[in-house]
Amino acid sequence: MLDDSPAIVNWNGLDPTEQVEITPILETTNNWIIFTHPLGAENAATPTPPIPKGAQRILYTKGKSGRERGWWRTGTDKLASYGLDTEVWISQNSTISDSNIIALEALL
Image (cartoon, rainbow, N blue to C red; front, side):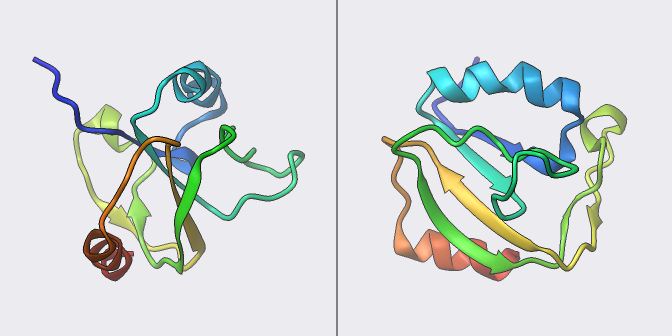
């Protein structure tokens, strides 16, 4: 049974095909969290996610870890060190408490 938890997306951990597949879901739902490198040029090596109008950037931090690429295929949920800036976005109608934002920042 599915619950009402938000879909959590590690945008930069998706390959281009997966990014194309998830884009319509992000555009038509209001219950997601996106982790991504800072939004930049559309012609970047890894395109930035399609952040729908009204979405909220709740956090910008210099992250030192992220999920290992392809973790969902192997079932091994390891962290990989990147040292790259990270942005966290939530959908338009979502809310998150300040204490949860602080806790999330500590993890990144």
